[in-house]
Length: 135
Image (tube, rainbow, N blue to C red; front, side, top):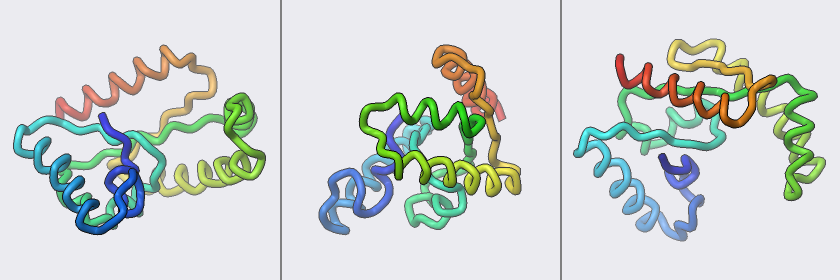
């Protein structure tokens, strides 16, 4: 599992296109060559991800969109000491956008985490990943 942000240019500490493409090539081609599945963790709308050049290295691609009701999401975000009010509002709006996009895709699953503990969420995500690997 790696953070998806490392596959987006300008993210993950890559200062030049050369550094970016070298990083992408190492990660993507190594996993592809070894036929190992790769789970990218992060926040990115499916359509944006599929538009990245680096998405060509992944096949098939599935999306697990974790959502919660707005009150639960607000409470969880505000509990993080690093979250500012503007980031909370952005995240609430982004969840609506990502959910709408995911509802239109066959390769996306929406998981409502509102009543889940972190342990329950981890187990649900593990099951989802294993189900995709079995396909």
